[in-house]
Image (cartoon, rainbow, N blue to C red; front, top):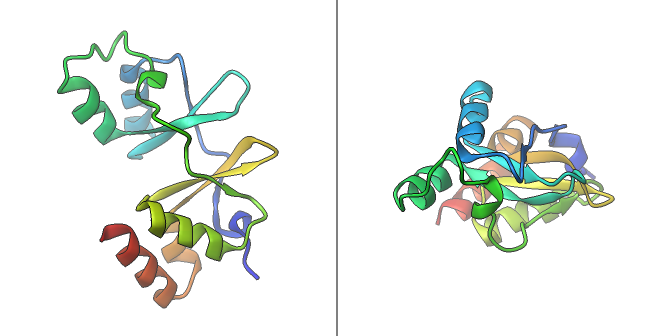
Length: 137
């Protein structure tokens, strides 16, 4: 049985919930990623922030990226998976919620992220194809 911890990208970088969107965008550029977890001072996951969120939900609506905190774009409770869950649970959640990146939690703390790339590099081509198709419908 493959666990989520077996294929996740461990120790992902977070953007602080009080950090500005411009800091988040700079970190995304530095890391060459399109999404970052939003974490609180307690290291608990508060949400996910994508480059699309910054452009479409903030800049296009006239929010100031220098003064708008990342937490302003965190909506609802993030979809997560436990580090010791079977990978099939993660794949099902990604498809059900049509998300490309799934935070991995252990004892309420963010410990990793599972992305489409992690799936493609770690699982059989069939599982990758089904998951990507389900996310993209």
